[in-house]
View (cartoon, rainbow, N blue to C red):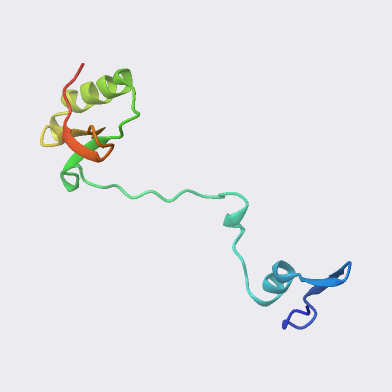
Amino acid sequence: MISVLENSYQFIGEKFKPNIEDDIKSKIRVPNLLKEHSEICLNKIPFDAFESVIFGHSVSKESKNIIINIIKDNSSLTHLKIQEVYHDVFGDLHVRDANPV
């Protein structure tokens, strides 16, 4: 098998293996972000943009309580619905209101 990309193949045993990575790097500019992040861009999102916080079914009770207390202590977050995911008897996932433990 020979790659259709010009000069982008390696001979291995009795087969040709495409060397696509080198070919792509030579034809397009790939940002260095693939290897490491040189900068982090964050935008401020207003609290009222969020409607609810939903905890996954595997979040520990301790973690839920810590987060719920942080939400309750911040007057800008009092509008949030606090919910959690749970499995029913058939294994299906559902969302319900979370009660602090």
